[in-house]
Length: 252
Image (cartoon, rainbow, N blue to C red; front, side, top):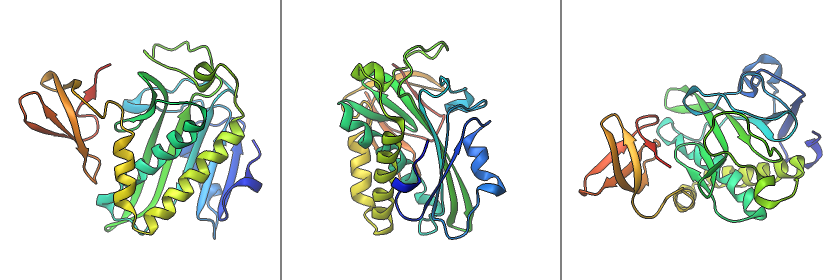
């Protein structure tokens, strides 16, 4: 996948035909480059790609977008790190908007089309004091795959949605440009507008829906997401509930 000439200034691209994990690859010494603000790594196949809650991510060889992105957002403090999850998710759904409707972000890090999962992402942050010295994200997006063999309950691809195959490189460039634009907005302290946009694109943003936590099933509506990423719900009894990652799941 050739992208270098089309990427924003200050980006470096590494394409690996196959790798164990793009997030691991981005941590390795050979991916470091002085004077580069962003390192983008892409691959046609991951042997140990991870999904949410430690699950594996199914991806047919050469059919989908598998990419990782490394940056150094030192202007953000640790308690605002979820903003990086927000712009990574928004970059993908805004790029997908050019190909259809009903794309959303299912908190904390799934990408949805209607009630079906089209992608997912993970982010890891390195901290020094209160500053974020490095962020590495890993994203898997179903693009041209049409046959899913795993036991994942609700996968879908962009090809299945639109009825045609898509240029992975062109889609990758669009995602990068959206990310770069949103990242620059963060640097310019436009956090409130970005957060509002993120909330507007949340899956099941309106109304009451089914959830489950350690105490069982309940129905609630989304009130918001705190800067540290905590999901804020209000149940049928009017009680506010606050959940960190993996403490609650939304039932389909």
